[in-house]
Amino acid sequence: MCLVNTEKEQGQTGQQQQEAAAAAARRGGGKLTNASSRASTFTTLESTSISTSEDSSRQQSQTNTLHQNHNSHSHSHTRTCPSPKVIFSWCILTLLSKEFSVFLPKFQSQAGAKTFIPAAYQYDEEHTFFDNTILTWGTDYAICVIMLYAAYLCLNATTTHSLTKLIPTDSRLVRRMDPSKSQALRMKSACLFLSYALSVFAGGYAHYTFTGGVNQLNTLSFRIWWSICVGSVTAAGGFMGACGSEICKRFHHEERSQCNNVFRLVYVPDVLWMMYGGYLTWVCLMGGISYKRPACDIFVAGTSQFVPTVYCILAVGSVRWKKMKEERGWNGNTVVHGAIRRWYRCMFYIGFALNAPLLPSYPCYIQYTSLSLGVVNAILHLNLTLAWGMQALSLRHICQAFNLVEEEEEDGGTIPAASSAAVEESPSGNDNNKQKYE
Image (cartoon, rainbow, N blue to C red; front, side):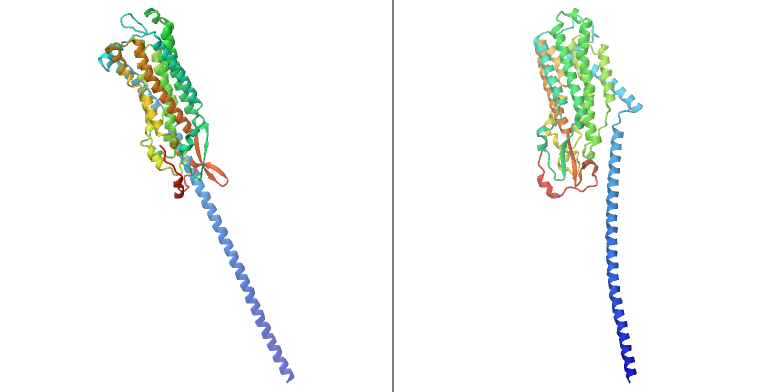
């Protein structure tokens, strides 16, 4: 009996040990399962993080590619070396402009036909009239001083002063000034007004010095001084067109908001404007626009500025300014549009078009009134001062606006807003900070 009981107790003990081992195995298996689950979850999170990082890198790469494509597209339209076909077409346009400048003054009216008589620097007693009063040379010198100051203002338009107050703020953008953005326009504007100053200075000197009648007007000295006076006006047409090209390049070929333009304006390289102004100046030196009344030369030279004048007006007028105000979005360069006020844009248009009435009015003053040449010249010089002054103020204002640059702020610094095409629109809460401006 003892042996039987002992065997039963050993069997029960073995069975308990097996159950305990199985329970321990189950507990161990649960721990392994939990560890495996945690490892699987970590692997999933790591995989998701890697996938997100890859998507972000891919998105940034696509953004950079789009930006590079945009820059290459812009550079293709603003290349400085035009094709032979473009050069040939431009030469035709320049010749037509010269012929138009010679044709229009003489055939505009009967008064024009009587006033604009070709001379080729050969003057006579019958048809030649040249004023030597202070009303002519005094106003010439006054305009010279004003134009020198205008050139100084444009050349030093490296700050924005109060313009930044007119621009809507955005918490995700950083605004700064970069004078290098306006350097080209500042230089070209200064050259434009320096050419104006040189023209009126040479004209004033000629009116003040050559008082001996026709005999002095037929000298080489007068021809040199008067060629400088008139040639500076023809050369100014090239500088004027170059200013328009700089504005066109900024608004039509460098901005990411090109869709907000009324139409796309063709960019004209500076070399073509140099050809334009250079050819017309050479025609002036050869006597191609010389008339019995030396003052008529200035009007013909001013008529040759028709092409660059229209180009400048189109460069500014082709932008949808109202739409640019309403749809700022994430266009960093739209800060330039916001800084150019409507009043200055109107001044720009008027300033470049205000000299047009001088051409038909001059022969009417000469043929149909009893006003002296000094009074007539003073009236015309007043109009000239207003037109050139408005050109100077508006171009200086645009130069100041070109200094402004907006950059998108990131955690690690700032990047140009132009390269963030894939960034979403700013939150609607920021709309409350936007101001109305013209």
